[in-house]
Length: 116
Image (cartoon, rainbow, N blue to C red; front, side, top):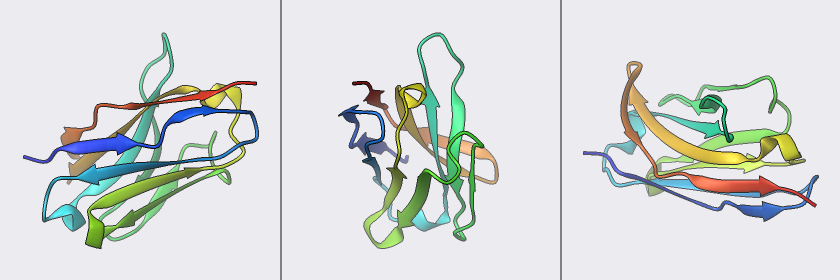
């Protein structure tokens, strides 16, 4: 069973940057599509960015040009580099592993707060 552990969240001022990490406890990390979702208070969870097992990426319109998703298969880790953060980016960010559109694991979430 895959387990995911996120880290890297915190409090940052508007315009600042954070990098989230998601470490997977599996030796077959490379076969999974990895994604970052976020959930703000009283809102539904939404897809932020996704990177497939082959390296293709896609992003929510709200983060295009500001966020970058990447993966390091050698270290079983997915990343989300977040630049030019805005207050509306405040949310709990979750990592997800999927294969053939079937979700296999969620992380516990990491809080990102953008505030002055």
